[in-house]
Length: 298
Ligand SMILES: Nc1nc2c(ncn2[C@@H]2O[C@H](COP(=O)(O)OP(=O)(O)OP(=O)(O)O)[C@@H](O)[C@H]2O)c(=O)[nH]1
Ligand SMILES: [Mg+2]
Image (cartoon, rainbow, N blue to C red; front, side, top):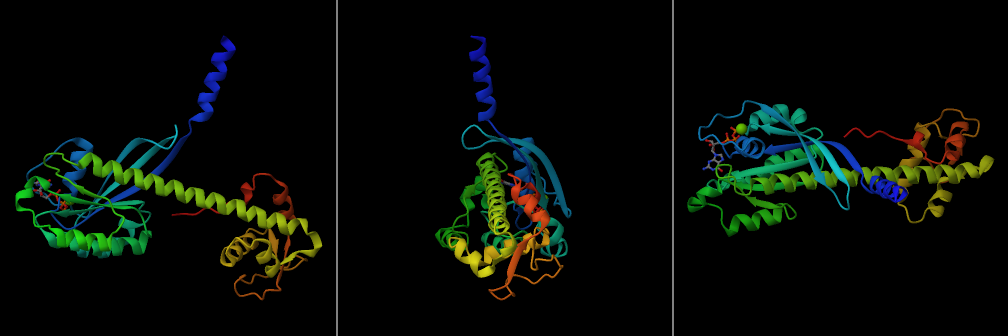
């Protein structure tokens, strides 16, 4: 009996993984659309009628537990960045505001259609710095639906500009749709971060395979062309990128004597040969290839 209990305990332990991560989610949109109000409603269940515009930006840190596929759990430390909806401030602080952003909630005011169109400008500035990230669009102040100025023309425009963005009808005043908007953008951001992690892990495995292929050929080394034909399923650009990474990591050399010449693979002729260095040979024998890590600061 006791043994059974133990093994059940163990299988539970191995089945559930906890993924810890840090996320930066930014709220963008024009002045007075209700960015601060949405955050205050979501995090503190509080709403203020009076308008006190945000000066510059403010960070709301919060910890959330998110269920992932299967039994896994993400423990996310999230920094929600609340920005002042002012274009001049955006220009000056674009870099610190948007650097490292992993998700965006873009907010417009249903009474002011221009605030919807201007979301495009916010996303352009953000994407230049943070790259493509998940975005959700909140049509805020839906409690004023009577004076709603957003019609079919606007929604058609939106579908063209942001075909995949989920839309939310929100009211910071009543709380309608607020939880849904935030929880959706949080889980899209978590998924995007996990997908990025998977891509960098598969990159590392591929790096290890290239190194192994070259290392077992010993003094023969390998030419670029031979690698292209060995790894036909992989784009040559990716092979060349990994070759450059491996040379930088001093696992490969362009010269059997190990002289430190570095020519970018993309610029070298197809006949250029690569050899495994002593370090490369040692790493190729280690099963995990952890030493081939390239830390990507995003
Ligand atoms: N009726 C209604 N009023 C809202 C809603 N959300 C915000 N407001 C009001 O709109 C005004 C502006 O809200 P804020 O949250 O300060 O807007 P903001 O986007 O943070 O503005 P900036 O910080 O200047 O960029 C305030 O007076 C809020 O009370 C809503 O859902 N419904
Ligand atoms: Mg504000």
